[in-house]
Image 1 (cartoon, rainbow, N blue to C red):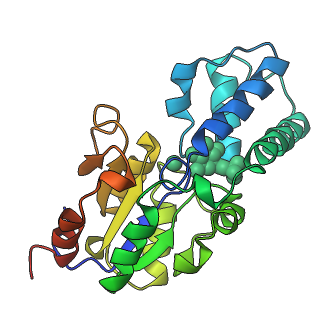
Image 2: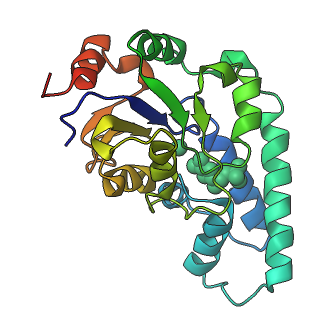
Length: 225
Ligand code: BG6
Ligand code: MG
């Protein structure tokens, strides 16, 4: 658990800053239907935070279809999933940003804390623009070439960019795999969602909006100050 002053907060995007998680799952469901699979809603938890390619592998494995598609066919499935997802997010505007996000960012900036995006999504930069929040980010992790969450790579990449230690960083995540990634990075984890699901997070809140500013202030100051 962190005890130094916090200098960096790394936010996940999907399901933390805006409700794009449901669109990811909707497009996986539509894709799965094409190969006669009715994707169980309970399976969503296993896809959250996981890269596009790893998500497809998980779905195929779960339904015993690992060997049904060639590598070329899998590439086409990934393109199709993304095309559908992009259609779904094309209707989003800045009004889809979750409540409390701007207040939280503004507070962190006022405390001199850097803000980074640690999303597995290659669509993240586009969504930052749509939601008009690009300028708040001091760094956006490029997930290409990094290991998928629950590997800590995405969070460590942001930390290294600022030459910090894990104890100076907080990660904010709604996915089980994402919280695992933060914990593995040795950072303080804030889960967004259900405490039963995110039982391994250091702290858990139902939304960004429900994180008290006083709590953030104390966490940022650290035990040692
Ligand atoms: C994560 C989502 O943020 O990004 C996953 O939680 C998604 O559901 C992953 O698969 C990759 O997103 P994209 O936009 O690159 O397909
Ligand atoms: Mg997420």
